[in-house]
Amino acid sequence: MKLPVFSSILLFASALLAACSSSRQPTVQTTESVPATITPQVNALTGTIVYSNEGDIYVMDTAGTGVTRLTDNPAEDFDPAWSPDGTQIAFRTHRDGNEEVYLMNADGSNQRNLSNAPGGDYSPAFSPDGKWIAFMSDRGGNANVWLMRLDGSDPRQVTGLPGISEYPTWSPDGNRIAFHCTNGRVLTNGTGDFEICVVNADGSGLVQLTDAQGESKLPAWSSDGTKIAFQSNRNDWPTLPDYEPLGYDPGEFGDYELYIMNTDGSDQQNLTNNPREDDTFPAWSRDGYLIFSRYGCLMVMNPEDRSVVQISDGSCAGTDTGQFPDWYQPAN
Image (cartoon, rainbow, N blue to C red; front, side, top):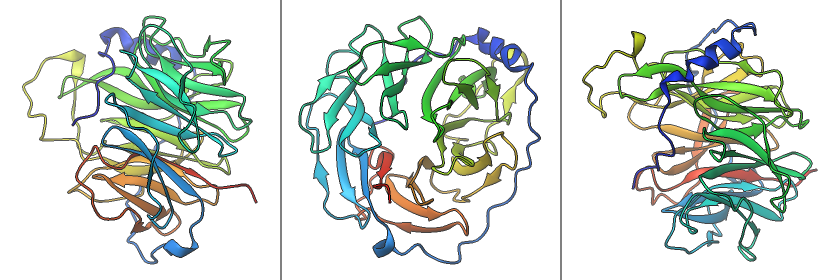
């Protein structure tokens, strides 16, 4: 299966550029990846991984064992996210006929609809204090970042951009939200160009952090608040001026690699260099490791030396296995 396409790109999303133009754009200094030197020791990793596999939600320990299926529904379940205390998991499902945000206990019990709204709601993320869930909703017409309380009450819109704003991630202090959004450029595959943006949790202070040819998506804020990891195919996607149509081969471009940057957008570095397979869906552990998906295999990286180890059981079958990992570690 392919990932669902959630919404069409609106060409007038170029208004985002105007919205962000008043903010100073950081200088991008992309560096080459560093060869792996020390493999992370699996037996030293701690915590529990939640992820989606073939349209259902699973958990496992960091050694890749103890795999437990939490959802078993004909509809597709994706985007799992741990609550800060590890007792609950939010996720996106299509079981009610449209995309909704659900909440369940960490053992899979008590699955219930939180968003319960027309249109599409997905990509939930808990606030660090556990009181709010940020998510994407197109209930207002365009796909924007919204907030709601843990019982689904008090929904409020955070962003008001004309294109797509999705996959929010909170800063550890709960004051800011990073997400990816369209900036109005059109790629040779006919889609809009995605960039990483950040906004205050009250909707003020919008800043665009990346500005590269290709897509920069799925930001993940480090637990110490200093870094944002993301995936990008910036070295593979040419863009078109003035939205001119061009024939293309959908399989010709699009290799995703992992990148990391400071939270102001500076010092953008390439973490992986794996041209045969996509490296996607980055998420941080509390102690500074990155988990991500490599063609369906769940991998862990030490971002200090770029060393990588596979933690899934090896039965990786493509892009619909081992998606959207999230890593829970108890506080020390």
